[in-house]
Amino acid sequence: MKPVSSSLSLGVIAAALSTLASLPAQADPAVIFDMGGKFDKSFNEAAYRGVERWKQETGKNYLEFEISNDTQRVQAIRRMAERGANPIISIGFAQGSALKQVAKDFPKTQFVIIDERVEGKNVQSVVFKEHEGSYLVGVMAALTSKTGKVGFVGGMDIPLIRKFQCGYEQGAKAANPKAEVFTNMTGTTSSAWNDPTRGGELAKAQFAKGSDVVFAAAGGTGNGVYQAAKDAGKLAIGVDSNQNHLQPGTMLTSMVKRVDVAVYNVLKAWTGGVQELGLKEGGVDYAMDQHNAKLVSPALKAKVDAYKADIIAGKIKVVDYMATSTCKY
Image 1 (cartoon, helix red, strand yellow):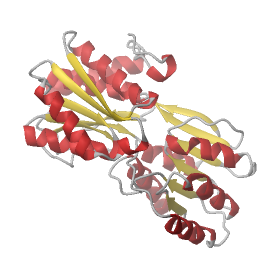
Image 2: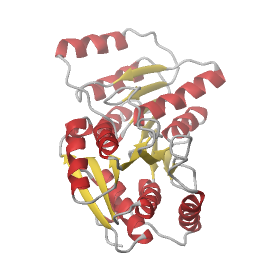
Image 3: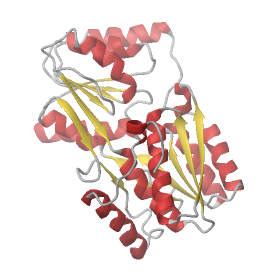
Image 4: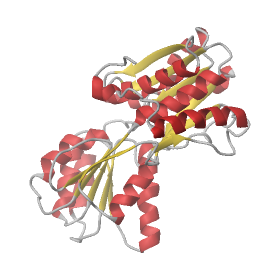
C-alpha cells in the first residue's frame, strides 16, 4: 500500500517529467516510486532501502523518479526506457498497467513490477503472500486481546487489501474461535491511502465496540489508526515496513513485506517471470524489535512461531482471497 499525495498542477508535472527527460542516456537501473514518495515510512521506503543497499555494495548509481499524480506513470516509465535505464523497477501494484503498456514498446529492456503480476518476456513480477503474514499477526492479536475483539482498517477496498483482511481473520479465529473481527475499509478511491483522519475515526469506532487491537493495512491512513490506538490506550499493528517505532508501546507488531529484499535481489540478478514470496521464502513475517519486546512475551512468541512453522510445513493452508475471491475457510 502506498500513501497518495495531493494532485499537482499540470505545469509542475510537466516540469518534473521534463527534468527526467533531460537526464543523460545510460544503462543504470531505474526505480520509480509510487504515490507518497520514497520516504513514506512504508512500502516505498522499503524499496528505497533495498536499492540503497545495492548501491552501497556495488558502488553503482541508479535513476529514480517519484510519482505524484496518476497521469505520470506511463510517461515516467517510458522516459526511463528512452534514456536507456535497465532494469526499470516500478514500485507498487498501481503501476502495473502502465508498465505493461510500455514494456511492449521496449522488448530489449528489462522491467520489474513489485506487488503485481504483469505478463511479458521482458518483465519480472514480484508478489507476496500477504495472507500468510497477516495470519500470524491475527494470531498475535487474538492471543493478546483481553476482550476477544480485534479490528482491521483497510485502505482502498480492493482484492489485495481483502487478502490482508482475510488472512488476519483466519489467524485470529485459529487462535480464538470465539474472536470477533471488525473490518472497515477507508474508501474506494486512491485517496483512501492517505486519510489519517478517517483512519483514526474508524479505529475509534472499533474501540467503542470493544476492540483492543487493530491492524491497519492502509498506507498513510494507518498513521491515524496508530495515533488513535495510542490515545485510547489500545494496541495497533503496522504493515509493509516495520512500523513498531512510530508509536513505541502501542505497536504490538508489524506485518512486514520484504520489499527491500525483493528490490535488492532483482538488481543483483534479473530473472523474468513471476516470483511469489511468502513465509518460507522470507518475503513476509511479523516484526520484533526493542520497541515491542515488552508487549510480546516469550510464550506468545513461541505460540506464533508454532503457527508460522506449520504454515511453512504446509500443515496450515491459509486461504488467499485473491485466488478465490472469497474468504471461506
